[in-house]
Length: 262
Image (cartoon, rainbow, N blue to C red; front, side, top):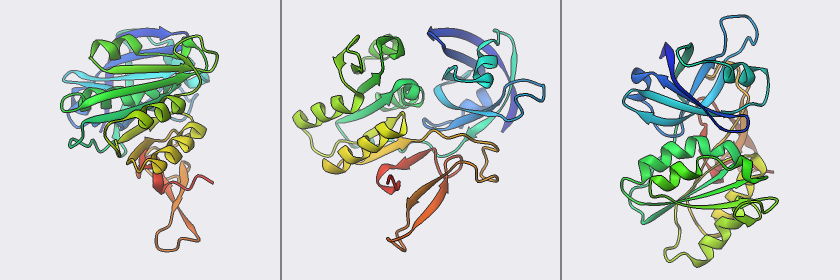
C-alpha cells in the first residue's frame, strides 16, 4: 500500500538516532514485527531511491520508525518536522514468526538493530517472558533502554568499551544467558551487523535453539524486481550449491540456519 503519512512525533533518542511516529493506520492494521516500509525522502530527484526502514512500533494510529543518520537520505529525513508528509509504501516483506509456546524469548540487538525487535518485544510480552540483549560500541549507541524496561522487559547491555553494562558484545551476553538457562532450546530473534548475526547463528546451532534474524540490505525497488538485495542461502536440493533470496520479499527475516554465512 502506498500512501502519504503525516509525521506526528519526532524525537532524537540519541546522537544521530531519530524516532518518527507516522499517521498510517491503514499500514499499521496489516503490519507485523519484522516488516518494513519504503520511504521516499523528498519530492525531488535526489535522493532518487526510496529508503527501507524497519517498523519500530505498531499501534492503532500508525507506525513508528527508528533510524540512525548514515548518509544523505537519512540526514534529510532527520531534518523533517512534525506535520511534514512522507510518501511511504508498506508493510513490506516477511516478518518474525513469534513462538507462543515458550517460557522465555531472547532478543539480541546490535546498535540500531533494536528497531524491529522493539515491536517484536511488545508482541511477545503478551504471552511470554522476554529478555532483550543489546550491544553497541559505546553507551551512546544503547537506545530504547528505558522504554523497554518500562514495558517490564528484562534488558542486559554490553558495550565494546565497557562504558555501560559488561565490556563485550551482545553475543557474549547470549552465551552467558544460555549457559545458565533453565529451559533448553529457547527461541532467539536477532537484528544487527552481519558479523554479529553470523556469531548469533553459530551460538543458536550450538544450543539447538531456533533462531530468526532480520537482515539489513541496500534496496532499490523494495518489491523484489531489481534483485539488488539478494543473499546466499542454503540450497537443500543441492547441498554443494546455493541459491539467492531477496531480502525485500523473501525476508528481511530469515531462519538463521538457512543463510550461507561463509
